Image (cartoon, rainbow, N blue to C red):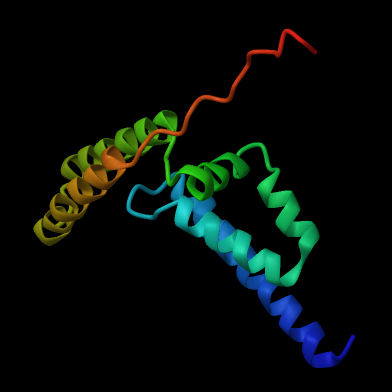
Length: 135
């Protein structure tokens, strides 16, 4: 493998880890989106390492949101509820912590926009659990 190709491959993987880290952080931070960073991480890993790409797509936590978005452009009900609860919690904490008015104003503009986006995304279909009786 040429040195340039080796460096590019490692750059893709490093950027993939950064995107994955931001996506994981987005689970806890309401204004930071999770799924877009997971999709970006999948793309970056596909350029740098098929093994990491496959690992991410098959990951118990990170894989389903990527698959739901790729296949259905959908967000699960659980993810929507968790995001809405986190947004409400961060707003409540901000009010109690007496954050500056400008920060509350930013939240008052952004959080409802994110909520509308989430609530207008479809919910992915439930996986089929029925068995074919002829098998």
